[in-house]
Length: 260
Ligand SMILES: Nc1ncnc2c1ncn2[C@@H]1O[C@H](COP(=O)(O)OP(=O)(O)OP(=O)(O)O)[C@@H](O)[C@H]1O
Image (cartoon, rainbow, N blue to C red; front, side):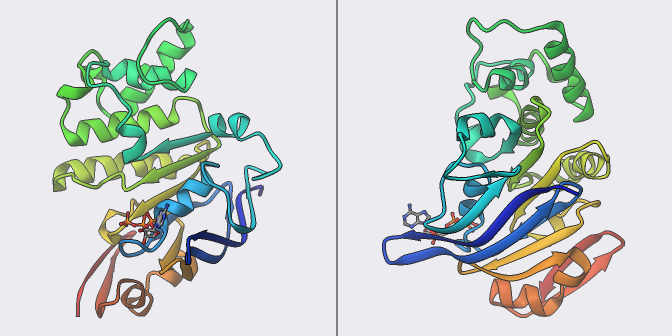
């Protein structure tokens, strides 16, 4: 198996503070990882390195075999699909759902004069269908519900057939029904062998889709635990990560945590 993320002793400093501190993390191309940790633990910073958006202050990070600092990140970034609040904030309200997905082929938001092939239109429509939102293809993004927008954002992240898919809190702000629908779509992706390696950041074990194989727990910028989900998602580890005593229950391939 090839490695898609290789972090060795990665530290990111901002002023006096190490917001990531000696993080070593290896992700293989057939793995689906969830990253958990309390507010400020460093999850978004970790994803920013995995996207090539920021570089480590010290240590080494390689993404898709390309070492940051000695590769052209503008060539690297199209190989990575990302759905995050930061990307979503750049989507114009007037853009149709289909165009939000389609324009990822050019790494732009807002259609202008780019030329698209039939194959691009077909892929955008297939992705809308995968997420059960074909009927919304011609609706303006700004008129969609939060759950519908999340699905459009992830469809967009998959448009370029990326080798690595990064999802930053995909279920945040969704009601229970919308969350479960989104998790079902993510399970389809996670369990499809043709899918890219995935990393999903969340605050809640209830938001881990079935099919995710590994977990990384961050606490104050450091790795508290990393490995197969069933080894990492223990009451002890999660209590340590979130600073509160938790009882953790596994329901088949889903998880829940409550205060003990
Ligand atoms: N440019 C910066 N300068 C100073 N501190 C920063 C900077 N960027 C991030 N931080 C701090 O680094 C820490 C980690 O931030 P990060 O956004 O990675 O955490 P997070 O785990 O994603 O948090 P949340 O769950 O709240 O989104 C936070 O304390 C944040 O305030």
